[in-house]
Image 1: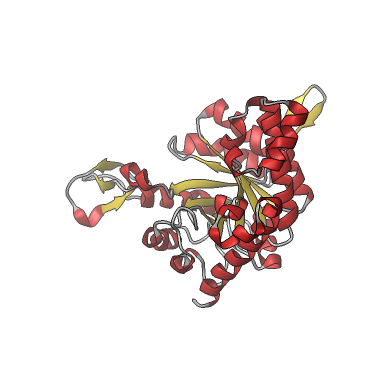
Image 2 (image 1 turned 30 degrees about the vertical axis):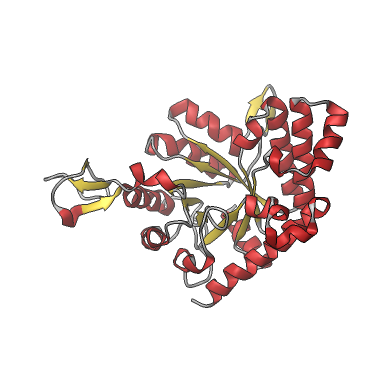
Length: 330
C-alpha cells in the first residue's frame, strides 16, 4: 500500500492528506437542518449530517489529493451511528481512489493489539466468510507498549499489504512532557540500538530525547518491512517542531512521515522542507479543519456556507501550492 500512496502523490503532485475530522460546529446549518428533519435531533441525525458533509467535501477535492485521514474519535462521539458513518466514509473515499489513513492511535499488547489491527487493517473470519470491519489502508499506532504492541500490526500489514504510521513526535504543545525527556545510556548498558536507558542523569554525550529513541526503533521496524524505496512502517512527526523533524528525517530515512499540525495548529510550509527527502518524497502533510472548515476563514468567507465544499477545494489548491513551492525550492 505504500507504493499506492507514493503513486497517488506523484500523480497529483500533492503531498497532502485531508483530515476528515468533522465537528457539528463545522457543518453548515442547511445540512444539519435537513438531517434533523429526517432523523430528529438524535445521534442518527448528527451522524447523517456528518456523512452528508463528508461526501460533499470528498466530491470537491478527491481529484486533487492522494489521501484522506478520518479521525475516529470524531465519529465515535456519536456512538454506533457515528461509527457506521466512519465506515461509510472509508468506503466512499476508497471508491474515489483515495488512500485512507485511519487516525485511530491504537496501542496495546497481545490479542488486544491483534484485534485492533484486524479491526482497522485486516479481515476477520465469521463462519465461512472473511469479512472486513473498517478497511483502512493505514492506521496510526501508539508505540508505548514497544514491540509487543507493534508486532501484531505488522503481522496483519504483511498479510494484507497495509501500513502503519507510528507516533514519534506529536504536534500538540504538551507533547514534550514525555517525548522530549532526555534518556541517558546507563553505564555498561548495550548501545542505543538495543539499549537499556535511564531517565535524566550524567554522560551528556550519551543523552538523547525519547522521541529520537522511538525514531530509532521505528527505523529498525521499517528496515524489516520494506516496499521499494520506502517502508510500510511510517512515522507521525508534527509540523510544529521542524528542528526535531530534521533530526527524525535523518534517523528514519526509509519511513514515510505523516505530518500533522500544518495551518490551524501553527505549522508552516516553509519549515517543512527537512521532512522531505531529496527525491521530493518521504512526507505527507495533513490539514483538517483548515480544509474542511475553510469557509469559516476570512480568506474563503466569500464562498459562504452554501458553497463550503468549493471553499475546501480552494484551500486544498492553496496548500498544494504552498508546499510545492517549499519542496521545489530545496
